[in-house]
Every structure is written in structure tokens, then in C-alpha cells.
Image (cartoon, rainbow, N blue to C red; front, side, top):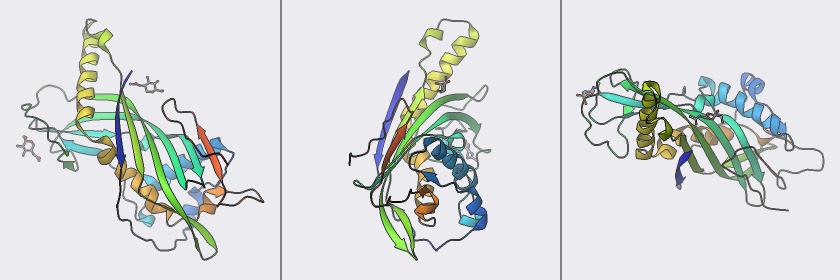
Length: 262
Ligand SMILES: *[C@@H]1O[C@H](CO)[C@@H](O)[C@H](O)[C@H]1NC(C)=O
Ligand SMILES: *[C@@H]1O[C@H](CO)[C@@H](O)[C@H](O)[C@H]1NC(C)=O
């Protein structure tokens, strides 16, 4: 397997201060977990993804759309999707460093579409060289992606509740497109698969996936957290305090979630 690693650390992204929120419907979808329960955190993410991150008009969260970008002069756009199927494979909180970390894994779905069918086909940061009009069937390939998200945070008391105010996230993104060179001299189907993997590999090398594909999604986590007290996320046992909490779980082969030792 070969990987392409993109690193992005963002500074100075403004975020809106949100109004206090009470929403009984949202309440049903939020799962609070004890800091010892990784399985619970996985369920928590799944529920949060489905009911909030993928779109929630009550919270002003727009419906999730794949990221579409212009593919040179081919008359087509490329769609990147898969965050709608992302799973939590790591989570950690460190109250000494004030860091909240998440690791997500997802199928990276790369799909070529005619440019008039893409809802919003933006210009990539770096345009593709002239390739010529596309002919033949539209291409698609599915790889994998792993994203590590690190939020600095600050605890704030509001009306007797504690809020975890998240700062701008650092993102490490690994896009995995399998190397199918062994199929190069195989039968026709193998050769086709090999060519598609080469095509997909070139595409993902060209774009800044962290900034353009992942950031619009992770920014929503930041925004929504302002509205939800940390108690709704993280249950503490008696004697524990939010100002002194450390946990880290991961089953990702790529990223470790490290917390400082007490
Ligand atoms: C689609 O791409 C072609 C070729 O680059 C271009 O001439 C045309 O304006 C594009 N159409 C849309 C709707 O973007
Ligand atoms: C993606 O990951 C899954 C699960 O780890 C694996 O079964 C699959 O072969 C991977 N796909 C690619 C294209 O690497």
C-alpha cells in the first residue's frame, strides 16, 4: 500500500459564537460516554454523524455534499465522498495539553461526473493541465482514507454548564490508493482496475484533500460544540473533573492518539 500524506495546520479561522441551545430532538441523538468506554465513543460518533454532521436544519448545519472539483478541460468534475460513512477509530482528550483528538476512517469514493450534473464544481487550488475532452465511460475508484483531527480547546462555564470551546483544528490526512502494479499484465479486467488506481492516485496527489475535502466537515464539529455542553458528551464518575481528564483509544494502524502522562 502506498500513501499520500497531507498535513494542514490552520490558524485564524474565525468562528461564530453561538446561541445557547436546547433541542429535545438533538438530545435524543447525543450519546454521552464515560471516559473509559471506547465502544460508546464509536456509537456516539455514529449518531452524531448521522443526525448532526450530515445535516441538521435545526442546528443550521447544511446537508453534506461530496466535494466536486473541476477536472481541467475534460468537461467533467471529480466528486470526492465517503465522510458520510466515516467511522471513529481513535479518540482522546488531554486536559494538560488541552487537546481533543479524533481519528476517522472512511472509504474514499472518487467519482467522475459530467460537469453539468455536479451541484457545485469548484476550481481546485491548482488547476489540472489540459487533458482534452473526456470520452468513454466515466471513471470511479474507491480507496480508503484516515483522518486525524486535533482540536485545541478551552473549558468555559456558561450558566452552570461546562462548554468545550474548540479552536482551529490540525488535520493529518492519509489517502490510501492501493498499488495494483501486479495487475498491469493481467487480464482485461485487472488491467482496467490497475489503470483506474493509477488515475485515482494521480488525482489525489494533485489536490489538497485536507483543506478542500475534510475541513468543511470537521469545521462543523467545532461549531456544534459551542452549543453542546461537554456533560452531554462526556460523563464523569464522581470525584472526576473536566479540568483533569486523560484518555486515549485507537485501533487505527496509522495514527496513535497520545496523551500526556499525569
Ligand atoms: C463543461 O466543460 C466544458 C469543457 O471544459 C465547458 O466548455 C463548459 O462550459 C462546462 N459546462 C459547465 C456547466 O460548467
Ligand atoms: C479499505 O479498507 C478496508 C478495511 O480496512 C479493506 O478491506 C479494503 O481492502 C481497503 N480498500 C482499499 C481500496 O484499499
